[in-house]
Length: 410
Ligand SMILES: *Cc1c(COP(=O)(O)O)cnc(C)c1O
Image 1 (cartoon, rainbow, N blue to C red):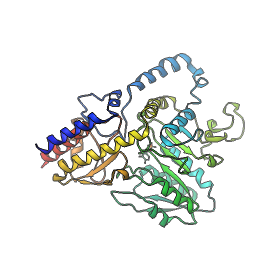
Image 2: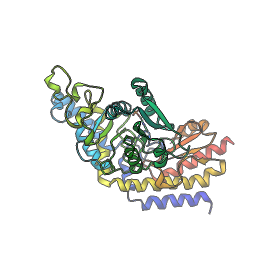
Image 3: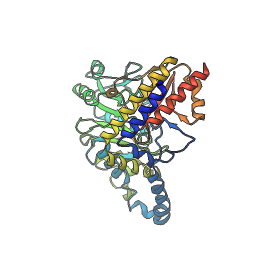
Image 4: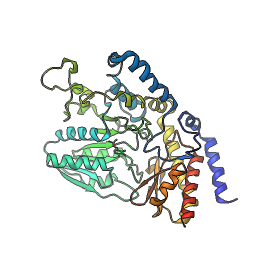
């Protein structure tokens, strides 16, 4: 038997044994013959069919029928209600600490500025060189604005920060440490409880970016004593392009003030009074009118995560990336492709990055045949394997197509 056919058989066996296999049919486009392998659910998750109905209901019944009354009939409460539900199913967060609003970028700014006011006698902030650009850029802006010094962690290309590295840089001038839980390129999964403890032992505060882990890797923000977290909702939360982000602020930090003092974060928005007074609780981290259209599409995925359980999602995520590695070893390594992600599934999220100098050139050809990973500088193809919408057969189809493109190029 050739390697390709034994992999095909193995993919089928894994799909047959997969307790979550039937979830895939709930997503729009899962059977589209023009897209045989969608490997970018970590960048833009597919919509759920249920969401089509929900958005239709919002437009026709709620917006079209209830008009402005909709604000009092649920829209104004939605950011906190959806935040609580997300906290419950995916974040290990008790109610009253999560809120949906803005973009990740804007929430990063608001929370970083709020956190810094809690450490007025400290002027250093730690971040890693490989963090997502928006995190680095926002922090550089705040450093210039507030006169801070940045301490840059150098992390391995196929890895990320660990507690030992963090402990080696934090000190009595460190106000804050900002890291991604799952690194956007390498997929490295940071040890959240150990790093949070190391940071707090130095008297600093910890902000986690969960964009690449929310909905796919379980976390216990309350139990692990996390101070702040942010994440987006268009990746593994399938909220759609530009869906609003979410923030977590631990209860003990909710007296802090954030810098974008809008009316909907104030104590009495419809009092329309003079002088900003922040609302009590997580609501003070809101600023302007909540994006109801964008928020509506998040609810079905949150419900589905609650239904199947984040632990089962994580198990399938590990199995998918493990199978992608197996297929890469057999079909792509002979072409010189190398892994740029951790080898141990416990140390990575739900995507892997593989490297080859030809990848920039073949990405457009893959997309044209409906095989859709994404390309990340300098040489990486990123295979994002969203557990509820991706099958093992689909992964193999994608890796086989990459092998074919590398072969025809040579
Ligand atoms: C996707 C991603 C972002 C995106 O920020 P937006 O404001 O939503 O564009 C930020 N940080 C990380 C780690 C990401 O993966």
